[in-house]
Image (cartoon, rainbow, N blue to C red; front, side, top):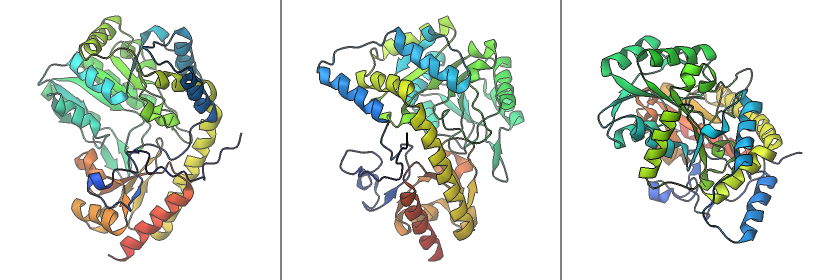
Length: 391
């Protein structure tokens, strides 16, 4: 099938976090939003039909998905990522961030140390701090725009701070790395050596480009599988974040029971009906849509690359191996973070994500969401160009 990703849908006045809350966030209502990681594309029609069919039943009591749901989820991982998980070891939750917070409470005590590699998805830091855990940061090394883990620093920080948990981001948001098997093995071996439990956020795993391949952390070694929780969801892949469905895979029975006990303590039980209906339909029928979308997103990223090279030589694009989020190095503009935010928001009338919110290493960067019609992306880049030229 041919899908029209160029079509613009008016998302304003739909209570959209992305479009309808500029004023509440202190921004001008006329900013063009390319910040939060949701897409401006209509989901597959088969998924819409499945939701409508369930809605037509008209009764929405407590619901638990049965064996065919988990068979579908496992089939997706097997086909897309070469991983054959045990369907009985998945736990459904409402979101990856919810799972992450519950995992921290299940496997650490207040004051325990948790390590992350910044710049990284900012809710990691928030989840650690707001749950009363100690934040430990091992900065990624930025070698001419290519990010790597500083393994010596990573292990040193683990030992010095008696770290209990490592939160891994793969593919890595915002820098766009898809960690290689060797890199994941090094991280995992260090964590095993020092008794560090790994929470692997793999929500962007379906957006990997070129020759890069996503490797599920739990698939690398049995020892890793027994020492980790893999957090995933169809919500980024198919743009259904508002339906609240995610999966946490914990191979170790004892650890999974501990996680379930934590969920019980939070009063969480049955999942969102429409979330599980949509998830199953996405994984059953959405592959053709996703493959077409990935081609379109790759072309969008190429468009950004070429436009910046031709018109904004002061800005450098960090080539993403995964995710549809592009990391822009704006340091050569010579602006501090406050000035850069002002340029983007007040002069260019754009709503992007400021790099510094992802950690100290994000200072001078901006994150732009390319999952929108190309005409919208073109308008955004033209606004940025005009603003830079007026500096």
